Length: 108
Image (cartoon, rainbow, N blue to C red; front, side, top):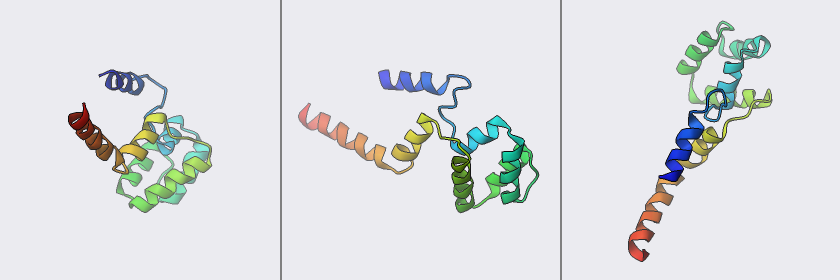
């Protein structure tokens, strides 16, 4: 239960941005010049809400390009966002958990 509690504390620290992706961090900072660049690529108004709506309708490849553009602008994803991308998004975490539970039942 300790890792679950620690994760709950990390994800609820306000303004830390630990669970934000690079693009979400860019949108949270409201830099007008950077928002204009993203909006031009998405063909929408340089407003945070318009950009979020355009991203919701965009193809996954366009979303990935916008994420890479945010990284190129100097924004980095948070720790929890990286963990989700590597462990959960790739599908490796459920396999590791399944093997761990199996090992505990066989050898524990």
